[in-house]
Image (cartoon, rainbow, N blue to C red; front, side, top):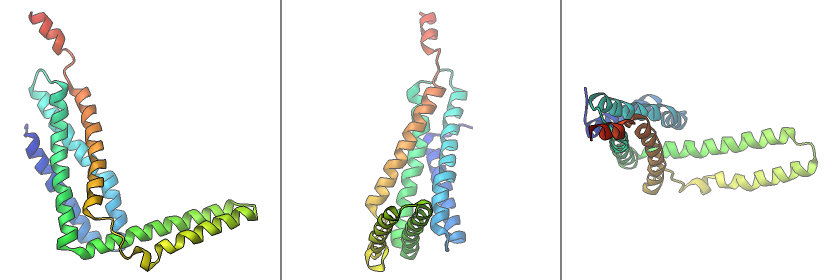
Length: 199
């Protein structure tokens, strides 16, 4: 069954929001940020790539001639619609419907950075042999620590409108690259040859 790209975009949006609310209701605890990060890194790219593939493949199955532009738009439009609606909805939810979830994500984001700093510091300190290098590492570590104090992180917000715009810009690059790949893969390579034969 062939669906229009905009319909598939709505389906991707609904699927994204279902995943978002499943994570929100069942994993909104000590690992909420880490789980959200893994979903964004692994689950959503597969979902959107699958949606783009289905969109292009269903069109390709029903049309003898498919241009690069046809295949590209069939892949890009569903991902763009699903992505932009999801970004707006998640931003609105975290900033207006449940600001506490936003605070939790911001807190866990800072804690993750602090944990990574500590891990890097202790790992590097174990392998250093010269006291001069150890002293330099200790100095840099102590210089970074104040940036994680409650006063320093009080106004830190990774979920503002500008940050969401940045996230979506990065996601758009993924959409474009994937759409170019599908456009090149599914375009009909014999279209010019068939045209010449007809003449």
